[in-house]
Amino acid sequence: MFFNSLDFAVFLPIVFTFYWLINSKNLQIQNAFIVIASYVFYSWWDWRFLALILTSTMVDYAVGRTLYNENNHTKRKALLWCSILVNIGILAVFKYYNFFVENFTAAFSIFGTSMQPNTLNIILPVGISFYTFQTLSYTIDVYNRKLQPTQNFIAFAAFVSFFPQLVAGPIERATHLLPQFLAKRSFNYALAVDGLRQMLWGLFKKVVIADNCAIYVNQIFENTADYSGGTLLVGALFFTLQIYGDFSGYSDMAIGTAKLFGFNLKQNFNFPFFSRNMAEFWRRWHISLSTWFRDYVFIPLGGSKQSKANTIRNIFIVFIVSGFWHGANWTFIIWGGLHALYYVPLLMYKKHLKQPHVVAYGRYLPSIKEGVQILSTFALTVLAFIFFRAENLTHASQYICNIFTKPFLGLAQFNDVVHFKITAVLIVVFIIAEWLGREGQHALDGLGKVGNQPIRYCVYYLIIAIVLLFGKKEEAFIYFQF
Image (cartoon, rainbow, N blue to C red; front, top):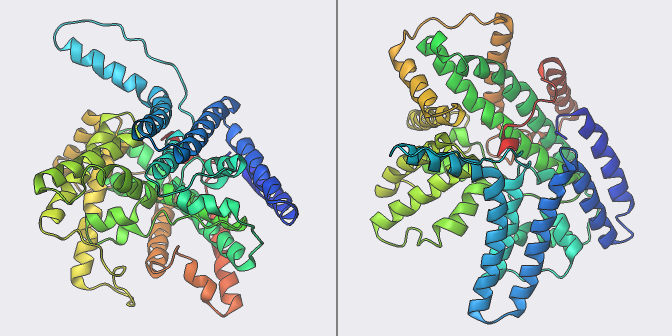
């Protein structure tokens, strides 16, 4: 079920009520209830997918317990590889098998060899890329003795399947989330209110911004040859806003939902479009994934403590693998490679170092220099996201070429011009709200500190009214396909 569906609007209050009713009785029962609720939530798509998540849970729980009591280095490494092969193997079969078979066949066709590949007609299980990485991080941390394995299978199963972040993250680490399942929880009114506030903003980003942008993105990308360069640029801009509103909107709703149950999830987006360079962008975009690749791929490869050549190699490996994680298509690999190209010059000139504060910290407006940096970084992001949205490399290259070669002026005459203008106005309002709230955990974070209650509730009701008037109903989230 989707967060923006009627099903979830019924599911959440029921789960919330029963969860807190059993809170004071038994923590084990409470965690078991979370597992049951999460499995119901996940099986709403297809109950057969439960076998996969249960397999990952059982394998990594068993490997973790065995690793802790095993001191033989060879056996420990064998146990780690057991976890890696099971998890990555499941992911590879369901997500990448057809990609490799088709490209293997295409490679042989160059030499005149004709092959009839056997591809699999299977559905990609929702959220498999997310919970696979989550369970893998647990095993790796136990192997590196950064974490003691839990003896509580129910708590571990709840950690793996926790429904708010199960299907599209954030990708939580066991060091952060698992202890929260082992500690007694009590209802926190302030945390729950902030959770509702964050859920509201996430819903606005998804159903108002992302889903309205999607109308024009789909129309433009599916008819690339019919539009002017200016319209194609609008399509690229709208898709960049769509994917941000869609994915960060999901993250906000996931984090907000978790707060209702007394859990704190990691921030997954930190206003990335206000970044001053691409290094800062990747510290603010899909934070749980970028830090996962940093800790489990980049650093084990040697990180930046080797020669410049090896460091650049490591950067390209991380970004290309990150692109491939998003989907079995060369467009995602090129998208990752482009970001590596963006990052390398910053590394060479030591401009990749972490900024101490968000841009224009403590000020309403950025400096001219900061404004130029933000716009140039955003432009590079928009260019890369064309590959992310395109059907294939040919489509992406044609789209980019047409932006620069076709007449730029003359926007398309969309079927509903009024709706297009309303969408543009809502985007401006959205950007202003994000800018004003950029120093918080989410755009409405600061609203909770406003002492005037009528003002707060006026803003809440205004957002709800906009959602009801302009929100699209039950559109799927983009990252569910990853």
